[in-house]
Length: 117
Length: 291
Image 1 (cartoon, rainbow over the protein chains, first blue to last red):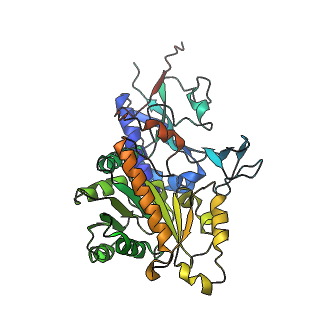
Image 2 (image 1 turned 180 degrees about the horizontal axis):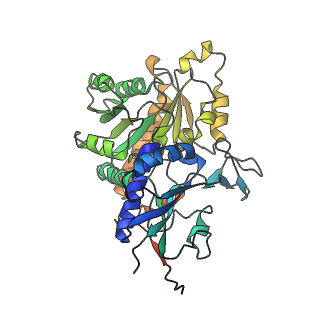
Image 3 (image 1 turned 90 degrees about the horizontal axis):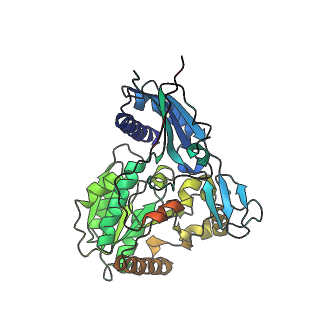
């Protein structure tokens, strides 16, 4: 699986942002993951400490937020919840739907520790 | 996926960027930053660069994905036999080890670069970029990228291709689209391979496979093919001809297309905006004075 390389990319991004903001450490990282992103939350949790070791985010808390799968129907206009292998409209059953949410793999938010005097 | 214009903001996370969002409150002396940046943004950036390489030359780039042994290389061999005189093909081969597949392609007189991924389970945009530097793209019409045989990881990585094709061999089971939704949802075309075996298999129903695919909200066409026997290859060849013609039209008009894997928001960025400022920060400094 590729969750370790995803976590390494995450740490790279987090460190870049932390440096740009002249932070001394990263306290918390919020990541959003949808079931259709191809990344699994438990595997990310396992891989994260290996990627974070020795970085500015070594002691950061990782908060992984699971995103719901929602689809918008192009036929009837309804928005409904869906499952990974049943993305049809929950109202009318048409398969002409667009994914509204559920494939996210985003660094959503950071909490940084800054030296304040 | 882009990080400049807010197309990453979905219904699911919009609350984070509003001032009253549940994560907007921070402890004193700390700084919270809303980022909303794709974890694979570095890969996506490289993929966009690869796509520019292809588009500048009017090349159609196709990513072939399947489980190991579904017949990706056999499909390429049959395609080269059918189209070798009509268009110029080049191939990037991804495998954990060996040059075997690249050798099979070169035996057909077609240039092939082998990427040995070691233990990596997928190709990424950087690997493909390196391979492109070992390839003479002048005069090439179609570049096939044969991904690592794997129905899971390759679906998550944009390589700079224009179309994703997923092969499903009929010996694998017709419920594969239901079992591997991330992969099959990303497909622009699904090829049911080794279809000559259907008559001796009683447990693979092509209609059932298509039914599972439609449940993924996919409109991708499904074609049956038996590349080894040169059966039913005509509809596949015609699909390729049509796609190449469409890509050449797009290239003339400075347009491009991304495979199905890309969210709709990506379509907003095909207007030549290649800003490198791909971070979108909101600063929330809290300098409350507690005495």
